[in-house]
Length: 275
Image (cartoon, rainbow, N blue to C red; front, side, top):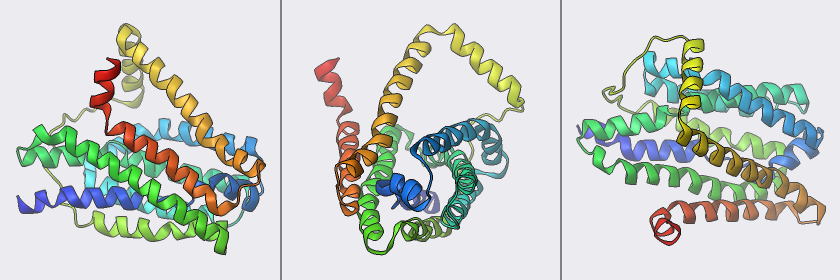
């Protein structure tokens, strides 16, 4: 039981290291200045990234189901590390496409597996009643890493270069990889299914069509995510346009993330105010 309990701080640390995206605050300059591609091509890369996640969610879910969440998290760290090396290998749109696919693979491998790992660890300790608080804290570690990494990354970029900022991320990813090996696989509490990809997809679409509240929630999420996407991917070109030095980009990114942390930790108060 002690080994299972140790999963909680370890998975927090794993999430923190995996989220130390030093390139986050200077991502557009990395693609356009060092990579030599146009902003339109950057948006194509992001569309490809999202589409890749859509394709990979099912097969990577099978990895977690059949090989274990621990293996899935180890592979996620490996894919992130390889993606960084690909991104920094040579500038070019098609090289970045490969990097995006590897990054999407990492995202899909960790997506759901990390939270399921955390919840099942709590369940094995008979502490699943604390899951909301623990999962919120888990998300806070991710956002905190974004907030810490962005100013550091913009400082690295201004001192030694954009390529080095990307390469520097291999260090926390290596730490996450090593840490994942120390995790203790908790007992699986979910229900394994052998349905095929197409059957799962059509079943999900059918369920979506037949549930009005789910459609409303989906529209709400899509519209908010679209606005957030526009902010995330346009603020850096705007900073360049007005002549803001690269060293300050990360602080703007950290500020945006800080707002997220404040809002996320005050849902209860916001519900009381707005209903």
